[in-house]
Length: 186
Image (cartoon, rainbow, N blue to C red):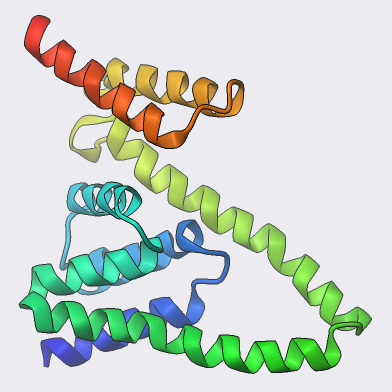
């Protein structure tokens, strides 16, 4: 039964996560936290972090991670298959349709209308990840506010946007700064 649930959950994620990994995050959250309760919000944040650090798309990495957590290697395989199957079918069909009808004005209008929706999904996912990073136990209260993660966020944003620093370097810097903080300031 768990294999069917994993397959169907990630089949839905794979089928409806248009716009890439960040757009898939609200869908992943809805399945693995809200619907099935396989992960907590804190675990979900860790999942996204691990998915970012490993090569490959976030949705597929998430499927593999969650499947492995819930049902071991067979679960990882089933969840990953559920996640990639819709893409294989959709991309094959869309490639054929797009090559045949790419000059239609209606198709261009549909693609333009999807862009704001994808941006909204990415923003929603960002907020979902940002709040637990800034507040202890995901409780949005002044007493649970953490200043160090906010500083890491702001410095990282500046390094990434203004100086176009490599994201890997930014992640390593933040990790090193936290290690130094733990060693010398606690």
